[in-house]
Length: 139
Image 1 (cartoon, rainbow, N blue to C red):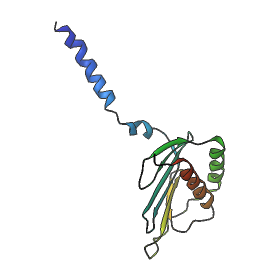
Image 2 (tube, rainbow, N blue to C red):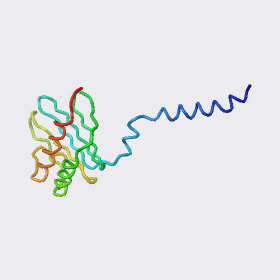
Image 3 (spheres, rainbow, N blue to C red):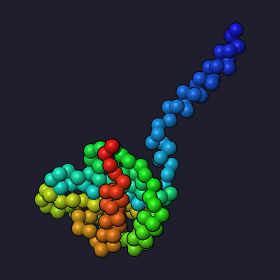
Image 4 (cartoon, rainbow, N blue to C red):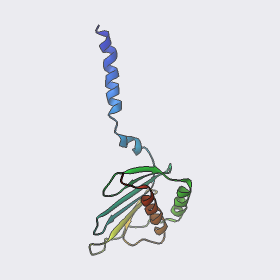
């Protein structure tokens, strides 16, 4: 009668350990290709677009759910084309005033925050904004 405890207890302990792994740990293993954060303004904008090397994205806004989608092949190719020209550079100092948007881009281990978009940033930011508008929706 006591033999069932020897078999059942380790199995229960293993099941509890496996089920305790958070869902974020699974997505944390993905490699990030590029990340955009847009923040600020009077409205309190907080947009975040993270594109992974496998072509999938995580999209978030200040309100509403975080959405995970996968890009179409054309969208991925366009983005990679824009990224070839991207030069991250240095961060800018925050301007004086209250109604400014900050754009933070992270790509290939470099991260910078800008308030005026440089020429090489404009197509990347515009494309990522377009992806955010297309795929993010409050269900």
